[in-house]
Image (cartoon, rainbow, N blue to C red; front, side):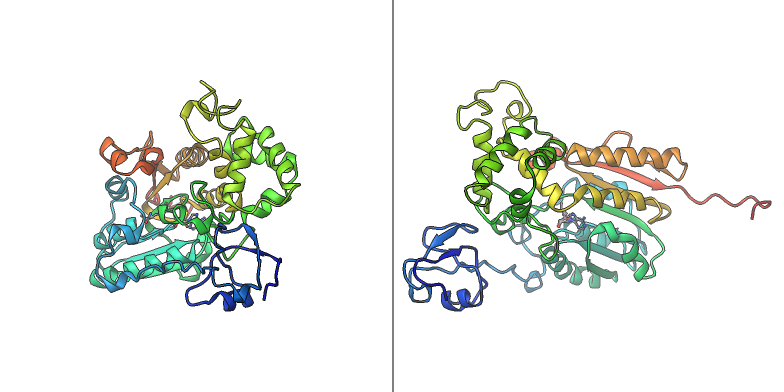
Length: 393
Ligand SMILES: C[S@@+](CC[C@H](N)C(=O)[O-])C[C@H]1O[C@@H](n2cnc3c(N)ncnc32)[C@H](O)[C@@H]1O
């Protein structure tokens, strides 16, 4: 039990926990005016305090309750859907590997195209993997498709396939980054438009939350991270401000970090503020000065580029001869890697590019789904194995 005057951490609790039970179980609690991740001071022993509210997050509705979960329940619209299906060209009986299942949007469109085939899906986020499995199961059954949903990082995709004796797939899809439902969940700490714990892990069962990174990295390491992964020219100023701010108390919430970064940029109307800078990395695009720092941290916390490098390294061996891969990326650090790897595979004579220039969303899709504006789809096809020369066979 927290005693009078004791500082407690404010997060969110699981359904069904009373404040007392929540506190005793070390659970996370919302205070009357406190935001998740902040600390608040108890005025009375917390178990007696009636004004403490326990935040009960709405559980993911079970998509099996209705045959078709609605868009709000799904919380994510697949980008470049028809373009992806056209590029992968899946057919009956084929094996398709979706290494970023997300909410199952692309996969739900792929399943009916491979009757009698197999769909293997991965997601590093156990919640999304579970949601996708429940969404796809009835569909797979209806079309006679064998379904494997795996909670795993695609960095280890090769061993996941080996464990299942899969020698290769006819089509592979990677739709990189995060899904909208993850971004829109304040408890994930991915977005600064909500206040929440500074976590950012797509797989909350592994790794260190972003708060640990910002509170422990040296000023130089922070500046380098923000510069290389966020491509923010104000990285040194931001790192200095973070170190200054954390010397007072640790930065625990998205709001605290965003405020610190904005202060480094000069605050409203200040030196780095977008309204007062007609040019520059942040101001020219009219984005919040915290955007790039958040992106850099998210990439670092989830080792996103390492995972992508591992996946690209495994390609095109993951494909059967003639098999196709489509990769959708959302920022230049990803797209550059995909572009280079696909070019290299073509030069090695192991595969051919299906796209010289990336496929991007048309005006109708960008109007409907703003997230699609930065999506770039590139495709690769493994060459059919050449017959061995009799002398070398
Ligand atoms: C853009 S969403 C995919 C959305 C999906 N195509 C759909 O239509 O619902 C990206 C998903 O990939 C997952 N993800 C990101 N990095 C991953 C990794 N390295 N390994 C496996 N899954 C990853 C995220 O957790 C997220 O659910």
